[in-house]
Length: 335
Ligand code: SF4
Image (cartoon, rainbow, N blue to C red; front, side):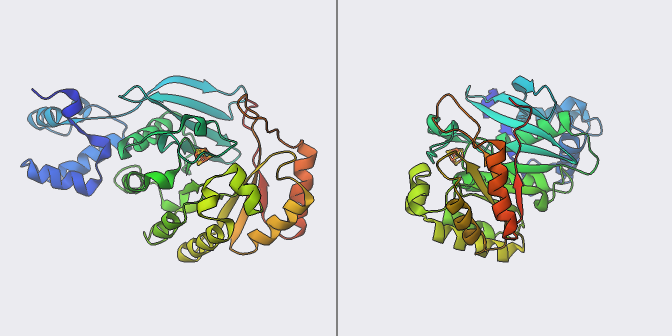
């Protein structure tokens, strides 16, 4: 008898894989399209509910596949409703977080790509775990399927950003597979322009992403304006220093015809001086880019603190005066 873990995880299948498998099983390949529509368009997460598939076929599918959807063990919405955090327990008891953000005029899902992270950024709580494992494609899709079905209200669609736990480009194959599943028009149909990958800066993987022919948004977590400063808070910089990183980001921008977002976590007394702003203007000028300032989110594990709102705005003003496109990311819900 097949145990549940031996059943094939359905959310890990691209549509073309599922069509081939249907044919191998002696079923019509368009059954895959029906299944995709039930899962991703109608949110039906059991074969029993897929009522336009005949009973014998549904029983055959139940014996081969499991619908590896995720549901959260904990859900927390900010008092002002600007964000809902979901803690998902995985089959091996590991936990990951996905967040639904309600921003003015847009909704965004922030998803995880790994359990923990190997990058060791000095300002990040996830870094303290180290990398425990990569998420499977279906575990990435599962977060988005749950969060989108539960929370999306706007008809105009929502955005996705790989900015939860993990370095997305350190789990490249599963990330790309998940994106192929999510952009399938017969499924969730999420256009690549709505998806942003945020990276600490693995240069060869940025170049590889540029060759995929999928115009995803790219955000580079820059956070410092000198190599000395950046290597101290982001060990990846010792391998791929700022110059190499921004050259790769520039190649990516040209290949996809999209501006790259430079994320800049602001830490008081570390990277928020006038000289930092001047250097940031210079660095941002090397590629088509926009800058997103993120005041550090205080944590009991770190000694950093954020600049005050007035200091953050002064820093922003300096960048604006140099004609840079700059936004400040506000904390959601104050918790
Ligand atoms: S890459 Fe992202 S998740 Fe990983 S340690 Fe750095 S900030 Fe944290």
